[in-house]
Amino acid sequence: RQTGLTALDYGFVNTAATRSAITFIDGDQGILRYRGYPIEQLAKNSTYLEVAWLLIYGELPTADQLADFDERIRHHTLLHEDLKRFFSALPHTAHPMSVLSSAVSALSTYYENESDPHNPEHIELNTVRMLAKLPVIAAYAHKKSIGQAFLYPDNSLSFVDNFLKLNFGVMSEPYEVNPVMSRALERLLILHEDHEQNASTSTVRLVGSTGANQFSSISAGINALYGPLHGGANEAVLEMLGRIRESGESVQRFVERVKNKEDGVKLMGFGHRVYKNYDPRAKLVKESADEVLAELGISDPLLDLAKELEEIALNDDYFRERRLYPNVDFYTGVIYKAMGFPTRMFTVLFAIGRLPGWLAQWREAGTDTHTKIGRPQQLYTGAVRRDYPGTV
Ligand code: CMC
Image (cartoon, rainbow, N blue to C red; front, top):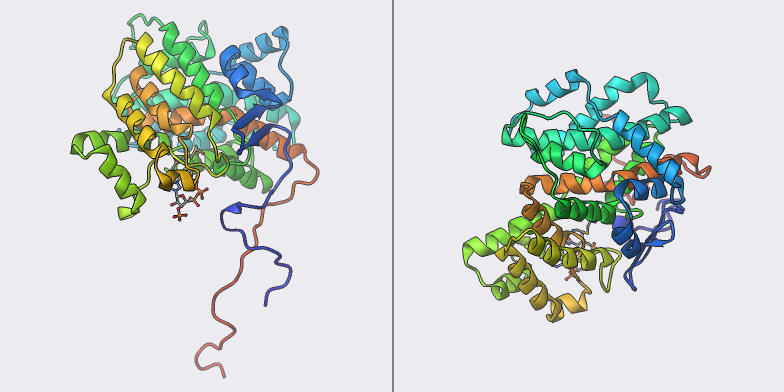
């Protein structure tokens, strides 16, 4: 019999590990708010950096505060030239998520004397550094995977436009940002900025609770996001759609296989631990998918396939009884693909989106006087005491 154990909760379905004032979710009603502001209003009217400020500091910034924040981030976009050589040591086949998490760990080695997790100046500086440098690292991971030269950041551009240029610009050729792509990417990034205590954010908090700095905590968060049940689902959705199309299997037959749990196949991009009626982000992403593809003049049969799949699943008892609906990852891949991102970059885009949330949550945990080292209990199911042969 174990003492002190009050509940066994696989997957933390019922257990809160923290208080938080950052993000509110009502899973039954499909509500998501950052610091009280509805996600629909922010996605329509705000910018990635404005929302980042809101999440991190708790209020919308004034025009001066936002301009100063933007300026400080532009000032820190360059990577040390030695860190750029880090990418040469990796195979071009490396998954960009592995490259991103490794490079964020490596980034910390440049700031070891300025990474005290209890020093407010260091925390502030590294918040800005990460917002400035992670998009550059992400774009270099992309360039590395397609064998193209890295570009220097263009600090005359906005955050999102600079990111697009770093990904799609080619050395010594002019690059013109497509405003449709820019706005669509900004909106998608905003939708991903925070989502309370999901697996990667909980990882960031858990690692942070040991006294680890922001770089270590966030590189751990990136690794947690990589899994296909979490952020990796956006890549898995596109692969699933591609496989259905290439195999010629009917959508109905695929859904039957999901329902029969054949080979553990799941409908990727469906289901959520918290949303049991609909995911408000998925609704906005679906609207965006139609708009963006139309504005970019792209017609993608995978979008039609995704809609057919959604339609069949939503009218099927298996999905209805289990309250499984499309989540944020179901339609994002179709948009990223239309923008020209390779499938393996999709989860990296999620990570850049989620970065402000991770930073805000790490900082909140650090100022919460109740924060303790995270240390879950277990229910022991192994052997009772026994003696090593020959000792008795
Ligand atoms: N396809 C088929 N069946 C499913 C799915 C799915 N996508 N999701 C859940 N189920 C079934 C599951 O098999 C179980 O059935 P049964 O009662 O017969 O055993 C039932 O629904 C309850 O599922 P669960 O696994 O207990 O639910 P969970 O809250 O533990 O898992 C989830 C949530 C998101 C991991 C899961 O729905 C899933 O694996 N979805 C596919 C992956 C995905 O799209 N992930 C992205 C999540 S949203 C963005 C993010 O957080 O990164």
